[in-house]
Length: 332
Picture 1: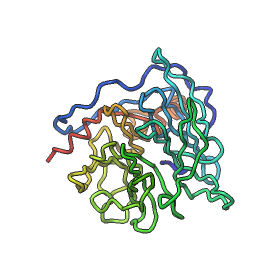
Picture 2: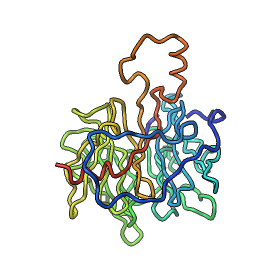
Picture 3: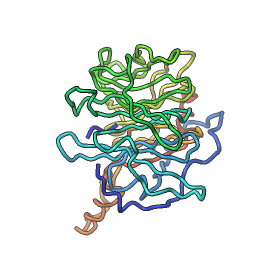
Picture 4: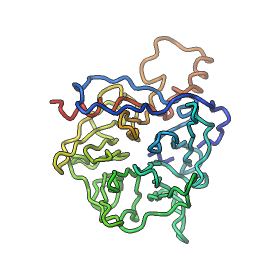
């Protein structure tokens, strides 16, 4: 989630090949690696010089939703965009999602059944006065080949405090982060889905959220709820914000572990999400050409070219094999 989009999409390339391989992750994770090579996702289509985040696929892998962020204005504006993959494997030109484009919308997540898409928005709630900082969770329902009108989740999920980054398990349980009462600043919660209704959210506890008043956010809960990957600002990390994992062992969350270098960098990593086939972990990183010491003095043209390049320090989407994350389950 980024609180703070450029609609100039004309420079984006069309028809780049890519998508989701059909094979699934190995059932027996290999030894935990010390470092993992992260792959930039669809450069020129998803990853561009603009500030992109999120990567939510429909279950068939043929539609991809992500966010583009802008820092223009006092609060910034974010929109959700999408692209479709044709039978030839080529991706269409990105377009605004039908439910986005006026207010700040981020964090799309397609439910495992493919019938609902969840996201956050700061759009006005009825006749209430608009609050640019108050994000709530909304959902749209699939109606044929398009999405219906956005509906704010009712019941105990949304609160007077902001809610961020929804993630839905196969059984309907909803994971999200919030500054609501019961959190130590910004914590991850779960609302169980029982008989068609969301229950009172429960804090995932210190194993996930830690003991200090830090920010735990941008969580991806596995469809079977066997693990959760999330972003956190914590001392002793690799960068300003890093990705961590906690495993569910018989209903108890294990103490969170930081993911390896290559996934995490000296920059900011956030918005983790698994691919529908269970093979990849997608995430956003703000790594750029100035993360490390420059090997030599750059010319002004080189500076300008770098600032206008994909690796200019704005958010881009990367992916790594999910097996690199699952290997931490058995690592000492």
